[in-house]
Image 1 (cartoon, rainbow over the protein chains, first blue to last red):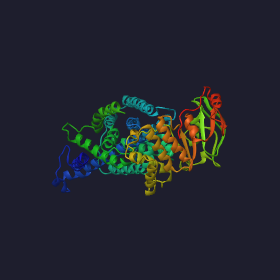
Image 2 (cartoon, chains in turn cyan, green):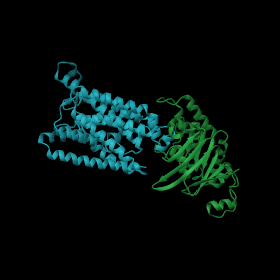
Image 3 (cartoon, chains in turn brown, yellow):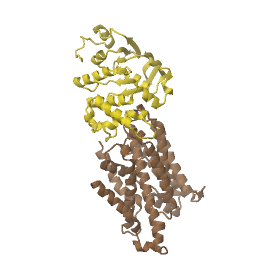
Image 4 (cartoon, one colour):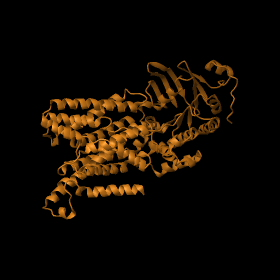
Length: 319
Length: 241
């Protein structure tokens, strides 16, 4: 019953979300195809809601994936420094003024993707030196990398021009504001690829979520599958972060809530986690757009305000 | 048949096993003091750790087997069942033994589920099927692990100290199951439990000073045990049958 209410509420928010914001729209406004309202609705609001939804899917699925593979509820691309890597990559592209397109893809995206990839490969490389309580140490490595990236970003700020810095600051706060259909559609394709990869390997993931040796003894090529899924996930995260900036803690909160609502083994939670992630980020985004402030609140700040206390709660309440 | 040739294992610069050569043609019990390398030997056979030397399954080097093929031939039962997933049920866990047999990317078949159901009934643990793995007692854990190994339908089953965490009563139940499995599987038993080893009646390999010593009989005499373990024995006390 409670579950149905939660899903119904989230779905309702998804449906009314495009009408909410600095300008509240009504159904009759948008039906007039020549009106300004109609343009806002179809070129700004709907793309934005879709973008938020797919971003939520990618963040939640990546969180679930990392937590399953590393068997630790605190593991997400965000807490492991992969998002920070993407931010630094994008920051370098902004600083170098590489806003122009390379083969139709913006340089910021490519650099962001490379930052995420570099971090994942570095983490995989470093993790082979870890023994025993591997997961905890991996988390510390992620934190160390995040700190390093922040310092590197500070250097870029220090030598950057005021205009570049303004762009960078806004970027690091995270934003789901998009114009037109290009970004939502490309993110939709990427979230579908990520979902497909995770779904294809759902039984391997179920075994990996028991223990590394259990998975290996039952016939799972753990190294190969870990590598394939982490690379696909980093590709998705890298692309997302290079468009939206970092959006923290969704990957931490959503898989946890879904697991509490549905205490079943991991392969039965993949679809629900993906959809819930999408709904949840749309909800957060709707909050930022409807709070009556001078301009809308950056989404990264909102999710961090909810997420950081939740992170602390997870650390304290861990079994 | 498992054919081990010049197996050497080093952990943190300390040599655990040195040039072990061993042909395992039938059921075998591996004994040895703490830290003698018994589990290391088992883990090497299962491919859980790296090693120097060669291990053949019949005529194939096991390093050349895919993990799926290896899982179809060998299953390994650890002393303790430790899983991260807090929600997985006994039935779902036992079904995972069918992973190597199921079609790639597809769900487990009805046949896989039937085998799981029959195995749970055979081991008389059907009443546990909805329970989560982490809520089981040590005895129930061992039975669940045996069930999983049985659904895996491998010829060889390796038990790594199956009674290490069990009270005498549960030890006896597990011991009886292991003995029963000898009819259809090749059992490799690693243990400290001399009563269990005595009851199972396998040939025995004793690992001492990084070397394997082979015994077909006359192992369980007080004199022999004293020589191997370096403590006095006065016949084994508990009787399982």
